[in-house]
Amino acid sequence: QYGTSEKANEIEGTPILRMNNIINGVLDTSDLKYINLSEKEFESLKLVKGDIIFNRTNSKELVGKTAVFNSGGDFVFASYLIRVKIDEKKADPTYINILFNSPVIRNQIDAISRQIIGQANINTEELGNFKFPLPPLSMQKEIAKKIETIRTEIAEIKGKANGILGITQIEIGEMLKV
Image (cartoon, rainbow, N blue to C red):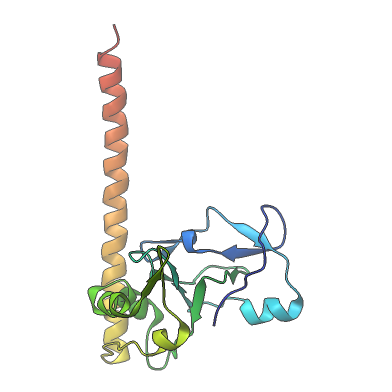
């Protein structure tokens, strides 16, 4: 399903997720805009846990970036995103999101995305034709859990490295004061 093309604002309404809220396969809700929708529109666009949002229009490199919606609260999504609903009896949303961000699906995205005036695009029909390797659900969950654990460890290491870098820059700055 495509999102809304209604104009967003800075202060009131329902938070709307946009393509810049998808960063490295994860949703970042630190920079939100808001939108006022009718109850009917809101209900049709309201994200639920496990929905995957897929960036359908952007530069060739950024088309196809995805994230799983696991946030609390009410959110809707913008028109250049596609909501993908996963049958959780057959596939784990986190596993599918990992595949979207892997060479397995990236190659399919690159093969079919059309570039027009600097923007690449994929539609819902094309997205529905992607081929996903689907091991048993228990294995999908195990793979997703391992990768999420590794991502958490990487984030912790990056945080520590940035802290050390900041301290080092301060110390160097102090040493260079004349």
